[in-house]
Amino acid sequence: MARQATGAAQRVAVATESLRDEKFNARRVELAEAALETLGELGFARTSLREIAQNSAFTHGVFHYYFSDKLDLICCCVRHYKAKCVTRYDEVVTTAQSRDELTEGFLAKLAATLRDEARMHRLWYDLRSQAMFEPAFRKDVLEIDKSLEAMIWRIATRYAELGNKKPASSPAALYALFDGLFQSALLRHLANDEKAVPDLLDEVRRLLPTIC
Amino acid sequence: MARQATGAAQRVAVATESLRDEKFNARRVELAEAALETLGELGFARTSLREIAQNSAFTHGVFHYYFSDKLDLICCCVRHYKAKCVTRYDEVVTTAQSRDELTEGFLAKLAATLRDEARMHRLWYDLRSQAMFEPAFRKDVLEIDKSLEAMIWRIATRYAELGNKKPASSPAALYALFDGLFQSALLRHLANDEKAVPDLLDEVRRLLPTIC
DNA sequence: AAATAATTTGGACAACCGTCAAGACGGCTG
DNA sequence: CAGCCGTCTTGACGGTTGTCCAAATTATTT
Image (cartoon, rainbow over all chains, first blue to last red; front, side, top):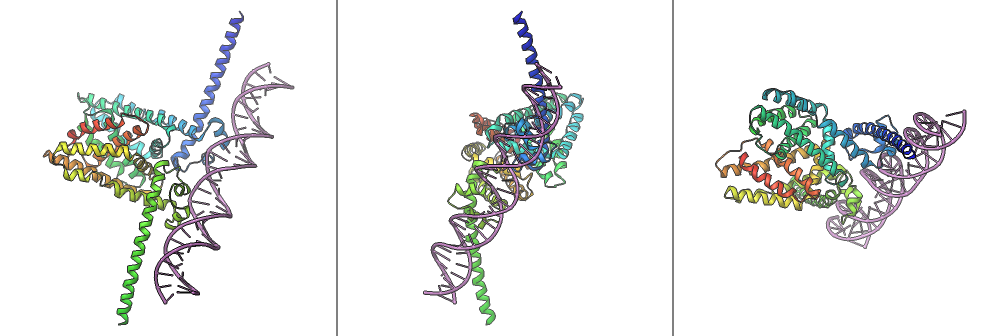
């Protein structure tokens, strides 16, 4: 009976603790999202905790309460960014019924995200470069890279499937190609090159049939 | 006569001034090279002028004497890096007499630079990302990117030529592909992934014939 | 309602940053 | 030799950084 009682008490304790954890983590994500705003604007090198706090509804002390470290905060940001980013093309992939439909849906999303979320994308490239210097970033960055590779691969295999073919290259090469093109287009777009987006679309449109 | 005298004097003045300029610029390059050491070690975000000076034979004042600005210094570093980097494969391209020879020569250089000059390469990716935030970097970075694209294109056209073919894709796409592969391999290599280099070589070896 | 715990605040701290300027050094010219 | 000029050193400056902490506030439990 005593055992049962402590068992119940433990269960309650565990439940409240996990609830607390959940709330704690929700707050962390909230703060990370606010931090992403400033990080996307200034980049990793120029962003300080105080700047993040000033551009948000929080004080700089809160960030230190929820994150042990500046790196801890940014790692959380990266991880949260991943979750939103990786599913971008999934709807297009599952609903498209023809090669053309998939192509146009993919290109539309590609152009939209390049234009509208340029700041988030440049932050991703910034942090991926930082991972080459800062070991603390590497695990998360490599994981996200894998996820993005899988994302591109889903598009490619679906595209091939709709033409009764198979992709002609490896997932790694295909991701490298698209990532390289996107990175270059992003830089040009940020440098106010009007042709950056259309050039990217042309290139991808030409490339897709040759690869699958 | 007076005009001749002043003409001669001017010529001398111009000569000494250009000599001074040359010497001044040589010193700038010397300092930039020293700065590259620390930049390659720490990355842009964590590198300060004082740190650069401490890891070199110079005092931090000299850098301010030769460069108007921190950005000015780093721009000079980038430009100097470019000159050394762009000619890496030229010898292989001009001397190779067969596809195999070109392939092996290219792969050997690729593997060597990935291993031996990893710090310079990660700095390049760092600064290219910085260019997405800092307009002052953009001109130089875009210019270097163009040079690198041309470098890859020289390899591809020579490779195609040796097989009496023509490259099957655009210079931009080809550069994006190789750059993406190299960047990914670099990150894995820096994360102590033993298979990073051989995987890259395998991938490139497989890719070359399908592209040209 | 009282007490305990969790959260938030805002200021203090030392360390560091980029920049600058006053002066020292050494070679060259007049 | 005196004076100038380019080069370099050194230390100081205001401002910013990450971090920490004691107190205030809010939420939760007893």
